[in-house]
Image 1: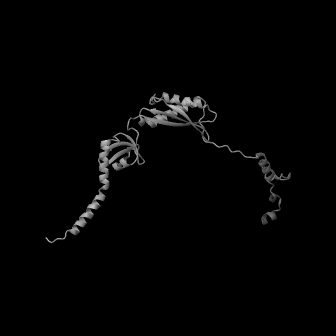
Image 2: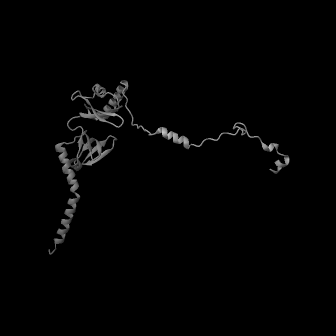
Image 3: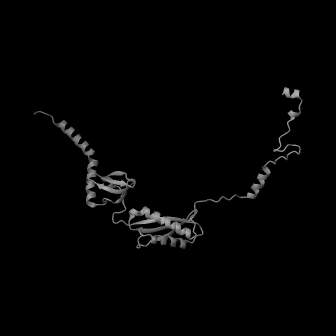
Length: 237
């Protein structure tokens, strides 16, 4: 028909390239969603941490995954991010997980007694697994305390915060009953030559003037000289 189709071919090629770049992320998320559905690295109900967000997986779609945070906020994460980024899944294999509790006691305490108290409190909790057994470690000589850490595995990692709170309460009571102090950060200030400083301050302080014998005391008002003056002087004043 005598039409030049070269310009139309150039326009069609440019449009196809633009559409390809525009759909690149959508296709990437779609393929990543298929990988998630096949490999199952995360499942509905798993406790995951991805991209600074933490919560339970509520829905896995072809394009994105919905995560409900502990504040009940819904976070929509693209599936490509779940495939490319590092994902922490607390409940991928099973629900068991390790719990760590750090405790500081005052200097002078018996380390073996403290570790025994920590392990006894852990064994008494019903959520703590008997195997592997819980154990305590002497971690460090702190600035104001001897630092220990209790480690143990619990049955359901979803109860991690409540179990840790209950164990801290039990540990605090057990240490108090044993007479072991949990110190707070404190600093001791030592002044050198304190006796010399006191002597210098006493010399620099001005001596208070002695009161005159004829001066009136603060409780007695000074005599009114105007009462003894002549009536003419009072009028002039």
